[in-house]
Image 1 (cartoon, rainbow over the protein chains, first blue to last red):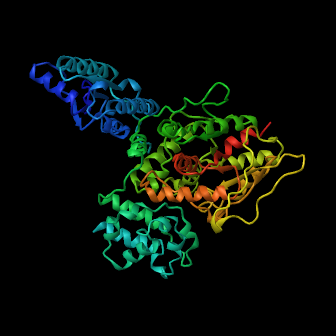
Image 2: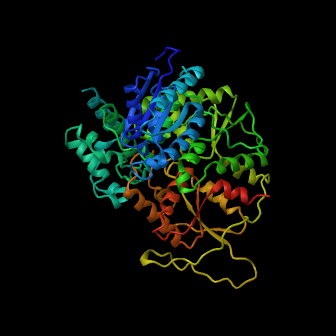
Image 3: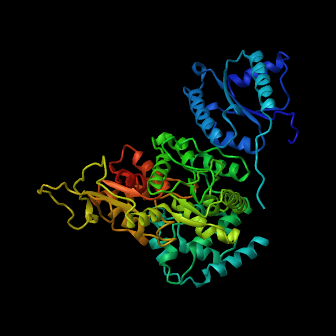
Length: 140
Length: 410
């Protein structure tokens, strides 16, 4: 975790299209950084600000949220809810000094295997440049 | 087991053995009134008679509001508050937790602060406010900027309180230090049993304030005020600075004539008292026929941390009394007997808490007041949230004392 070169990105994906896209990325042999960890949620609308903040607390340097395209959502408004949650969390992340750049939302269709790999690679590259989140040591 | 020894010690310290089973605690408890499963007396009995671990497993351990009504009234002087807190610390150590409200976002924020993340919470400071980086007076804002984001869903902003506080301080000649790296005071961690994180937060904040060269810390939040005054010294020893609440500062300046009042701008007219059941106040209705405008009736919600836990009840009333054209009508349960706003430390917000809040709002409404004044940003949030439920008819404006004072000074 202390390795400065690693990007340590957590990807929250919806179990529907983004998860299929991630699967497609694997099937079609697309390359993306191995230090991006995928956490699948039943629906992206079930994401909460606390989950994202806890990911940062556990050492993530960036969080990518992969939701379904709005019109494809299996649960009517899950993708829209996810968008609202990410917007709210961006404000919190800014207040917490982590920086809104480290949180990104992207929507996917099931065929987006190649795009999934591209988005993840690009985001990991960006996070790698940003480096580690600045943290104060506890005063004695 | 190590924890059992600690619990024994806590029983001694909090005088739980003194319990005479009179039940005044349970009779006074605002939670027991709406949730029969919760009872302070039962807790003490379970602890004294049953296996010690039983109370740690009990989900009702997290229902206590730590409002201190029971401790204040207990004839055997059992310190329930401290007792509940100690039980929560042990429960957490044993791996049991309460259910976080707001999906745990506030707990996450506090954890990140304790982990050392560097907050940047001063976006609410605009050009009209005079602040500085170092100086004698430090204004501790607390969680207000976070509340703005989290409570958007109930259309409530809290930073105007901070804004009004700095404006008032500027008016009386104080240019406060406002630091963007200020962390959570740890109040909610302390009362929900996160002891280690609380100590870290206390150390961060003490260092920040001392580094800014401050001699005095001014609070708008009673929880932060109580935590700094009563709890920090138990962890940090001598703080190295004085802790005051903004109402005390303003009152002192007003007495010196440095703060001049005028009738408050933009307040709604008084409404007739709502007669409902036998609880209606004694003959408050009055029809004005004179030429002078009728005073605007307000009522006041005492925050637990100021009233019962610190004994500060009169200062805020005196300050309200200085505003011309404002008449303070007390609710039947006021000062030491005031009812808690129904939810504390961001753990366990359930239907019972809503019942307490709606009951309190109805009580405020029955006084005939058109404004419920609070001195705690969290009371304002909780009561506004209960009011936001559009099915219920609890139409009363909720204002913070600081912004009300700002509206009524020259």
